[in-house]
Length: 263
Image (cartoon, helix red, strand yellow):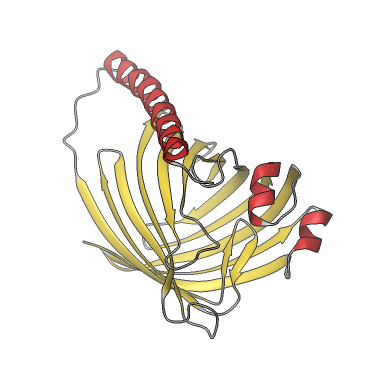
């Protein structure tokens, strides 16, 4: 049962973890800048919007909508800080047709030191009108290391601090990005794992498992300086037999088109 104390504890742990991570990384970055005689750079704001149409909605290998959906998305960035709102709008003939059945609100901080980047954020998931899907919050940390100009390795760790407290999903992936400022191709290969709390909450199987393998490819074409279009495709498969047997579809192909505009 969700209580005020549980909400307070979850938010407190998230804020504490976020603060410690950012403080340590910020001090290391400032020290490196002072050592290299780096000059202070004025902060710049960036605001953008995206609109995506896809054939389905898959999250961490789990199929939430098997018919077409739209994902309107707004974001803001300034000096490494960010805030965004991501939504899922059901287009197909499914429950919650022609409504927003998910709204995600996030705030975060990104810090880069040499080839290493840390992105830490709090993301609040809202499921309007769904009594069987309580709102929840996750602390998310993403570490990315640029191996070369084209290749990077990332580790994604997600920890639920509210409705499914203790649920953990993690992922390690390699990204290859080729192209130029006008046209680029990005390929991602990643493996994900989840603990028993996560799998019990979302699949009904209470066991730890290396759960997911997915491959994503996307082509980004810049139409103008502030407008781009990105067709993309993703194949995902659940790896563990018990998870595959617990869902209606364990292998999914998602494709769609994203139109982006930066103000």
